[in-house]
Length: 184
Image (tube, rainbow, N blue to C red; front, side, top):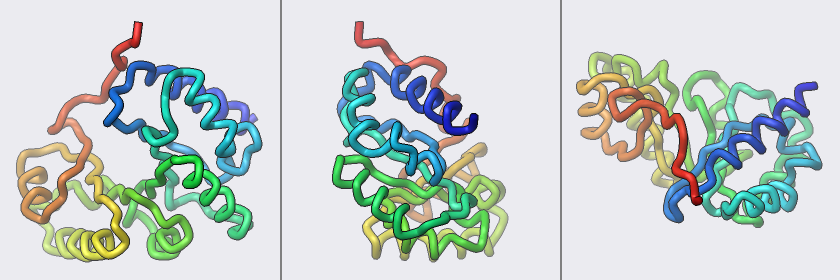
């Protein structure tokens, strides 16, 4: 029943984003398997988004790099269809496993989310800073944005800012949004 659960979560997330500002983006966690689901493929997902007043250009599909991608050719066709429909792609948890570079090559994302385990204490770790600097160089070359996950302290925030990271999430920046404004 995993696919049914993923469909339900997707619809719930999209419907809860009614009233999303036109320049804002909704990051939607998804699995490689869900993207192959006929009920969630590009045209259908775009239709579901449209039904709740969202445009595909406002939706970023987050794919975790920890998910093993089977049937790579089919998966890449699905990703290209999503991009053609206007969806953006993000790789979640960058740096949390060895598959990062392979995943970047296969997904060609617009966003790279630097894993919380590497953000935590980055102000005190030369190795973590060096890893992020290398990811920043790569992101610039492929025209992707870096998002730092789990920014919890002022010191982490300042270090990330000094390194050139302009996007982040975490309690230092603000608590998770409970409810988005309604359009009615």
